[in-house]
Amino acid sequence: MALLALAALPVSCQTNQAQESMPNILFIAVDDLKPILGCYGNTLIRTPNIDRIAARGTVFMSNYCQQAVSGPTRASLMTGMRPDYTGVWDLKTRMRDVNPDILTLPQYLSRYGYTTQGIGKVYDSRCVDENIDGVSWTVPYYRNSDEYYPPETGKPQGQYQNPQTKTNALKFRAEGQSKGLRGSELNDYVTANVRPTVECEEVPDNAYNDGANARHARDILISLAQDENPFFFAVGFAKPHLPFVAPKKYWDMYSREEMPLAQFTDQAKNSPEIAYHHAGEIYNYTDIPSIASFSNSMVGLDLPEEKQRELIHGYHAAVSYTDANIGILLNTLDSLGLTDNTIIVLWGDHGWHLGDHNLWCKHTNFEQAARAPLLISAPWIKPSVTSSPTEFVDIFPTLCDLAGLDIPEHLDGESLVRLMKKPGSSVKEFAVSQYPRTRSKAESERLGYSGGEFMGYSIRTARYRYTLWLKDNFRSSMPFSEDLFFASELYDYVTDPLETVNVADEQEYEKVAGELHEEIVQFFARQAIKHKNQKLPY
Image 1 (cartoon, rainbow, N blue to C red):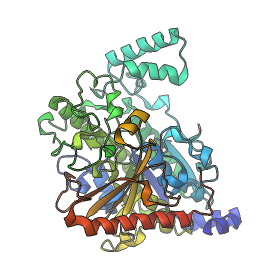
Image 2 (image 1 turned 135 degrees about the vertical axis):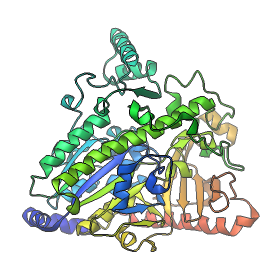
Image 3 (image 1 turned 90 degrees about the vertical axis):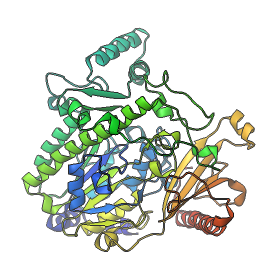
Image 4 (image 1 turned 120 degrees about the horizontal axis):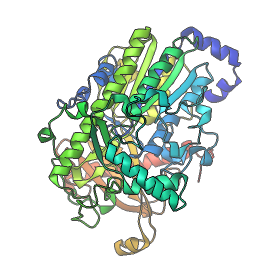
């Protein structure tokens, strides 16, 4: 394997090669960023800096995450391996606890002489060690630093700067301490009592964590410019993840009345209940339970229209706030003369439901959760737009290819360089996402099945999405049997872009459903063969 060949190279040889010819890489991660961006055709959002990256790079219009929740999709992206190999399907499994020898992108680049550094949310901290996967970085991972916050506000309390919210948080923190709570238990106690979904305060950009980190990242870039080695610098922004906090000037960019409500807010006709959720993430915010209701026992979360518009307004404001922070990085690259030798990658880890299907947050295989933005700018490749299906597992091999490095043979993704040079071409017929569901014993019995562990595998072609829900804790490395079948979904985005009807069982789509079913079964077979000699984490 290429990886083994690399390991045999003398370190000095690797370093010299890197110093002579390899480009820098600025790797920008944005939490919960869906592709409602100017470069994706949205005319309402204001994202001039993200659009700057698009204007000099490739916009991947049909890009999909591997699992629409932070920890698993980031573990998959950073390793170029699907969740069924990483063993991370939730927000509590540490990647190296189950897969200690897994190879990450920055770890691999460091073997070729790259300095690898990071700040902000790149991995999900719950799915790596306390050093944010220490072996990935040649310099210890940077933490929030007090010096980058304005003295007049100081650091936020949790994520908030509103004086009353901060006072309430301090009150509940003292109350929790009096109960003997410490550490994460204490933090959970505070957020259970003080956790609004939005905040609009007239404060400087660096009063919030992302703004402070952007200024810290600027100084790190200045330092990296003095290094002889090429750099891989990962910068992660937390917004627009809940809560939607941003300085008032970003809220003022938008009118509450112009916020677009979802066009389709019902369960798709003929679709299985297992495809949905009750938006538990947002329901845990303290201003939601008193105004939310559940019109369907299994599907969605009903919110008043006024609150929907406020949330959508907050999402837009948070995106524009992040865009301004990205502008700091781009301006720094330009001022240092690094732009012409720096690959820029920007990705949002998954999409986000803003009321479609009566859903909020992510956690599904539907289009609004699975589709995610990806921009890659390599200065020597002409700007372009491609609609060919791509996936986050493709980023690792693509950056190796752009840097002139061997691509490790075990990776699940494909290099996208051919697409960047010839945007009308393709590298794959479909992208694959997946999402697990766990049902209670009572619910399982009510619905007529014995086990409560399911996985929904979804393939997205240029026109269709076919999702297969499988029971008995199936994973793609295991032998497939039709006996595992629980439910299927098929959506035709030419005739039904809002996913209003599941046509999997309609006679008109019998041939299409059969072909896509065979495609996903063959995908399972290929995955099982590919990894049969790999030590899997289950």
